Amino acid sequence: MQTRTPAGRTGRPRSASADAAILAATRQALVELGWSKLTLGDVATRAGVAKTTLYRRWSGKNELVVDAVAELFDELSLPDRGSLAADMEGVVLQFAAILARPEARSGLMAVVAEATRDEALRERIRASIVDRQKRLVLAGRARAEERGELPPSTDPEESARTVDLIFDMVAGAVVHRTLVSAQPADEEWVRAFTRVMLQGLAAA
Image (tube, rainbow, N blue to C red; front, side, top):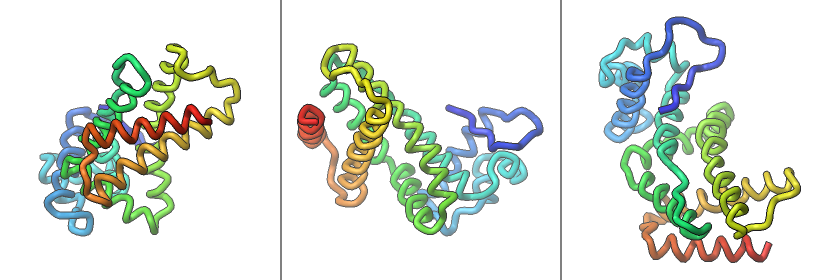
């Protein structure tokens, strides 16, 4: 788990075990209570820590819930399955499996809904979830270039735009499929989706 320390705060060193307990308790509370009824006091009780412990780490519920959701997506990794298509299928299947978990569904939909009226929360989602998971696209592209499956990128600005576009397409499609349409992102769907994605990359 990556320990996230709010900027500008000082004090005793943070406990990784306490952080893990707090984030797990937050996800459990989201599933059982929902966003509106979740309180830091309830999370503290579930985690077995003092409420002041939470406030030393997070300034409020928004920050706490985003970090609790972000920790789930930190589990994503880029498998080496021998080809760009197979690697991409592996990541998408992992992503779909995480979204199938009740705590991921409840947490992600809650923070996205709240973010529609909270710019600071949107920025935290971008920094803690979106920007951090773009590492998978960067790693996948670099590996595909090493294999000769994609040409080397020579324009940094164009490369960054492509990374953003690929991430948005993958994340948007899987979230819509699983959370909006409530359809499974199974191996057959993932294989078809990956084929369409790679056809687009080849054309570009």
